[in-house]
Image (cartoon, rainbow, N blue to C red; front, side):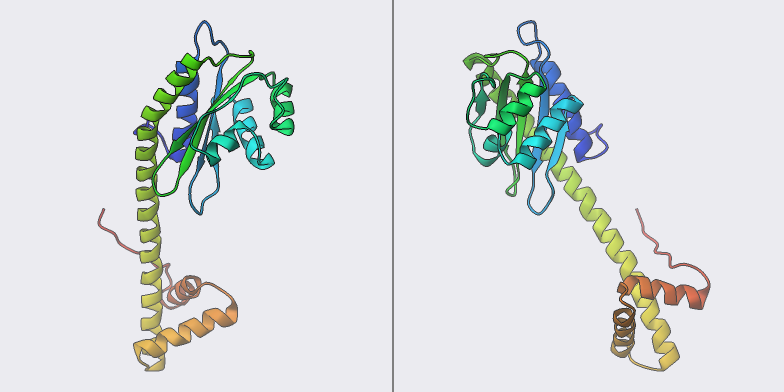
Length: 229
């Protein structure tokens, strides 16, 4: 799934679907699954085996309560055996019952660099998650943790490569623009850069945008950066 996913969000969706299919059996029919991932300085990522499952995950995050939130904040699995009589999270319980969900199992995954995730299982039956089922789910989530960390590392590497490429493109445009200014104004590199910076500030535009416009006006073509890949 890691190698076949388009991005981290796509992997989470596939993980939710695979988890639901794996957990569903003759005695646990119609299980749905949701995955929530929290990383530092990034928005929460939600995925679900069904649209309703994803919605329930997003709803709990927006409410700030529920078994998924509790598992995300802690290190232990959280269980609702019967949402009709559970009193810990009234708003969440009402939303679960409205979707026909009576039992919920939320299992946390402690990841790298302060990231944490939770895999939630939803069942339309009360008392669907026995002690044996909970232990099995926790063992499964422990193994899924390895795949999720690998997917996160790949996504981080791809993002870093993209950021570096964009930074190199910006640097190319800026360096060319400074060179143009040096030739026009007969000034030093530092003075050329200062002129370009003041121009961008006065126009309230990004330095790269002003630099690219200057180069295009002089050369008649857009800035191109060549990479060896």
